[in-house]
Length: 255
Image (cartoon, rainbow, N blue to C red):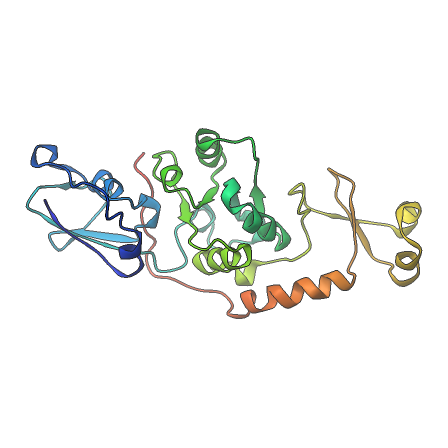
């Protein structure tokens, strides 16, 4: 069996119950070996074989030494590769049902995040590939799929902590535009004149607020009320650390 070392946070993901492959299974691709031990390829920022930088397709022999390192934020993403100066509009995710809470909060911050409770792993990985979206999930098997070029294994079970993870991992703090996207529909909000929605407003809302937005998809009306201040109190600490910059990006899945 190769001498395999998982550094830092990767060591926590190792499946201790996994059986090591037999000698006859070697040589084999680093990606296959790593995922046999329970760690999705999306979590590998850098790896070496016998001390040399290698990629996920590098063959690993039975007597080799493999070292794997986690990502240094920001992780690789389609928007980072596509443009030099990206914006909130270029950030795109697709979230599994097990991180739906974080998905809604990402929408709250203005980031395009697809969620559909009817999607299975195949649907998610295919749409992610076709639309260049980052897959967010707590499901390791989903993130092991070769169609998933960009993804993140979310560690926490709490939606707000999950949001903090994603913002940190992808350096999103300086890109956030809170309250610009419908949390229900994932559609960008547009301004609407007060007179056009007056008949849908409660008396106190009519009296104290003059600026409104509407979702073109579901027609919900939004305004900066007391609930906005409460949400900002929770969002503030997550965005306070600002933009994060990283070194060289990690790996994508095998084509």
